[in-house]
Image (cartoon, rainbow, N blue to C red; front, top):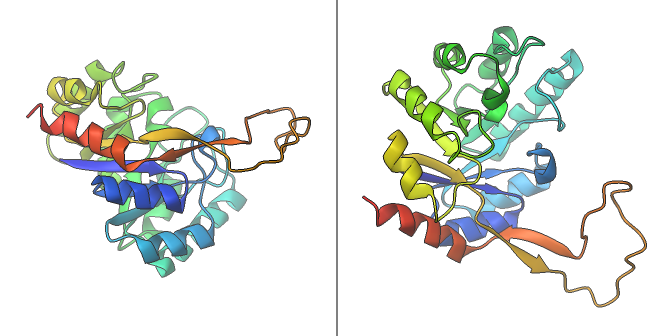
Length: 247
C-alpha cells in the first residue's frame, strides 16, 4: 500500500510527511487541476523532505493537447526537476480525438529517464480507457492516477475495478479525487487498488488584520484571498488510519 498526498505548497509537503505519507505530488494552480510548481518550491521541498517527491509537469490548466512550444517548456521543466533531485514526475498528453498522444509521450518519457513517471488524470478524459491502459503500459509509465473516469474515485469504483483486473500487476493504478477517511476503505475493498492519492486539506484563515475585500487578485474569478487550504498532518493520519483499520 502507498499513500500520496497532492500538495499545494512546501508547508503542505511537510505536513504530509508528518502525517505519515509515503510520497507527495507537489503542484501549483490547484484550482486548475494542478500546474508545474516553481523552482523555489521544488528546491525547498526537496531540502525538507525525506519521503519521495514527485512534481506535476503541466504548463497550464485546461485540456491536455499541447503545442510544440508547450512541449519544449515541459521538457525543460523535467530537466530542471531532475537537477533538483525529485523522485518522479507526473504528466499526460492526449490527441485532439481523445487518444493517448504516443509520440509526445515518448518525448517526455525520454526526458524523464531515471525518474518514476505517473500518467495523471488526463487518463480520466481519454476516449477509451482500456486501450489507453495498454498504451501507457507500453510507454513504460510506473503508474496511472485515475478516478475511474468519474467525478470522484468513489463514483468510479466499477471502472477502477475493471482496470485493476486488466492491469494484472503490469502497472500500478492509484485511485485519486475525493479520496478521504470516509471512503478509502470502500474503494480499496471494491477495487483491489492499494495506492491512494488525496489532499487531506483543511481551510486556514489568513493572519492579515487589514483586508480590502473590494479588490480581487483573480479578476472575474473571485476566490476568498484571506482563506487558504493546506494539508494537515491529522487529516493525513486519519485517512491512512481508516485504510489500515479495514485490512
